[in-house]
Image 1 (spheres, rainbow, N blue to C red):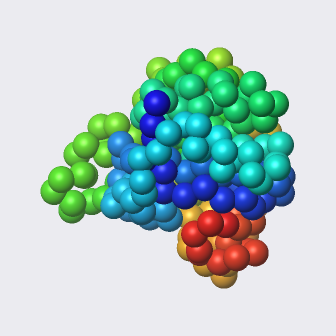
Image 2 (cartoon, rainbow, N blue to C red):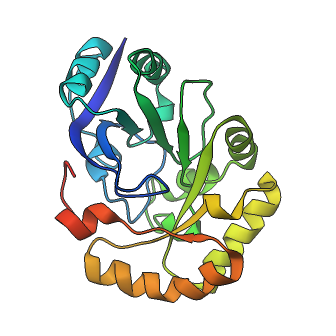
Amino acid sequence: MKLRIAEIFHSVQGEGIWAGVPSTFVRVSGCNLRCVWCDTPYASWSPEGPTINIEEIIEKVVSGNLDHVVLTGGEPMLFEPIVDLAAELRALGKTITVETAGTIYRDMECDLMSISPKLGHSTPVGDAQWEKRHEELRLQPEVLRKLVNSYNSQLKFVVTGLESEIAEIDLLLSEIGPVAADRILLMPEGRDQASLWATAKKLVPVALERNWRLAPRLQIDLFGDTRGT
């Protein structure tokens, strides 16, 4: 069993309810969406990396001697071998986060399903190849409902602070069923510290009103917009 891997690295989790946890990241290359603001184009718009055996992936993960593993992308749920990888890592005693856009369901070993549904501002408007495909795929309420009901999960929304985005989140939540407020995270869109924190300030009233979390991107604060962080 093999997966195309863009990068494997050891760092701290920068996002979500487990932010700050030392983690080994396995970034699978390949994605079924094309978010206009994607911060990992080398795993989506222009997938990079070698296709390697699961055994080699596990060897690289174990070399970091960390308890927590993040399976990310791209979109790791696209690829069936991710199930075997997660199972073997869990057998080694690893705690596993899976980061996904929530368009595909798989039954797999997972301690935290980190789901990032893509809102309307993610669509690459004007891109003849991807605009229609992305728009049709980006939200799959039935898949999201199944993921939320099957796993310990968080819903992580990338937002710019517009009221229309919050309304879109409200509508989606009404479609997928009840989600605990402290598992709904607002994450500012941006590729640098200044723009992230400027947007974060706009989101404080929304977080206070709904009891949702305001989620920083610690990796940008610490390392900037760089690979392997």
